Length: 230
Image 1 (tube, rainbow, N blue to C red):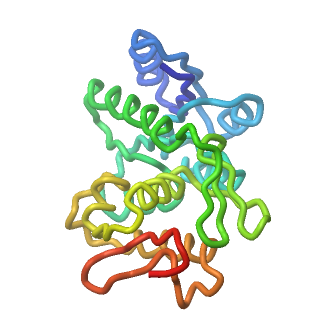
Image 2: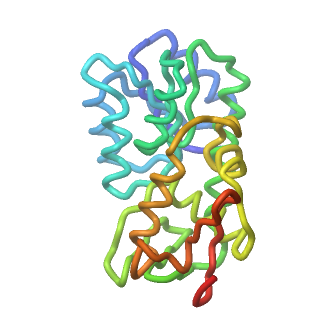
């Protein structure tokens, strides 16, 4: 069970979701505009955000980006009528952890919320800090440091790092990452993985152009090497 911020301008849908999620044991706070959502996230912390993208005073993705830029790594599930794959990829790249299109089935949404809350436990092991190359991560707090300087990682970046570290020394395919980390179809035509790997390499590697920790294996996938080299 968790504290959930629901950002939704449709008051009927918002009330229905508040009641349904409350029945599941969640504490739900509702904001109907970006301005309200910004104010409430500045005032208190939440375990998860359900974020409508089509809001009367702007795009919900702006809030998503702002939260990630501030270092907040709580799960964000985007709720939207946008159905194109590129829209979903854009949402994920802006920091959303999941993407649910309207109209949706309530049991599926409840299951996705539960999965995201469980995943926060999955990316927060009992060990405090893990260091790979120049990057140190505290998975319990979501804090990270590059060469000793604080850096902000999104929830998706933390999830990708946790997955790669859990499979350290083994090759993981792009298909595995798409399905297990991004929860996209394995054959999705997107370069989002390359974008995230590039970001992480800039933090992990002394020379990102010649990686020794997060390496690519042509035609196979990626491998995380926690020692001195491949």
